[in-house]
Length: 419
Image (cartoon, rainbow, N blue to C red; front, side, top):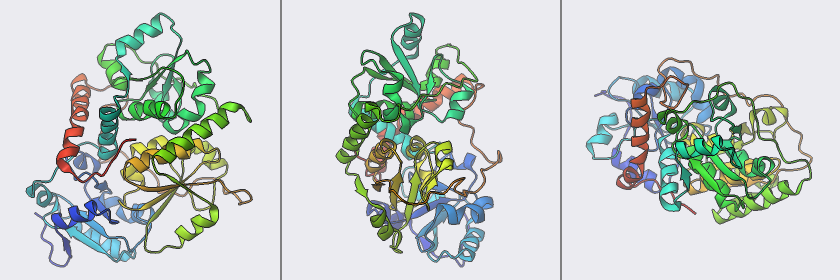
């Protein structure tokens, strides 16, 4: 166990109480991602010590936020405290006993990465009974040339690596906006897939929540289920779902449908002037995300906004917003992408609002200045990445996901709800 002689500590009970009270807190695991994936508290975010100086100010934008650090006895905490204090962070403590201290209190440890987003996806399916089709049934529909549209809800880069035959790239937040352009006939069956389960569940339920007239199913277990069924994947595909034509009724329809979903989830809409008020609140952390595709963001975005594709923001919330209890404001020039993303963040327990895109504000171009991506060192190899995964590892991953609803119940800190 790490010996902390100069560092203030936060007890596991104190941390749990802060999470239950929905106070702002950032719980940071200082280990490498592969170690983090073996077990961590539900709302922990992972920043390895070697990247802390590079990432901390970006991912923890308010230096007065309470930050709780932990390791598993590797001696990472004290140097991390020094780094954060040198960056201006004023409320830094160590989790008493580290990871072992949390476990010894009988509190839950969650495996894998982006665990609470994945657990939420399982909760959605559990309560909404999100419809799905197994891989052999979808393969049969493809073989008989049935009237179907397969929408791949992952990032385009993942889709291009490997995809279901005939699938079209439609990243998650784009689904409600673009689905009618791909499947204009209400009699066309829409099938949403991802690599595993979460994004296909959330994507399918997004279209159902938005009231699209089609029959809509998730591909059960995504490309993992497809591979385990012995069916081949395409590689190198470049098909992208188009936007509805400018001024087309489908855009207005998508806007109205998405706004209704966000309203049902309790999402607020704010103006540019009202955003200025939130930006001026030094007592709260504020994350501002433009949820469009990277190329749209780079072509012109509102000042002060970062880029996170909406589907990925829901899938990787712990990465994009490590401060649990912070405020989140989303922007999208057309509206549906922000509204649908916000509807899910609200159900994940976030204080989230959608900015009504202002007219007359000078846009910025290029990247948002995020730290450069991490290299391969210390990285956890996801069982759903690439095309060379062992069948046993893929099945073990699915078995883990199936158990997440019960683990959420045991943990008791999540505060999620499902509309």
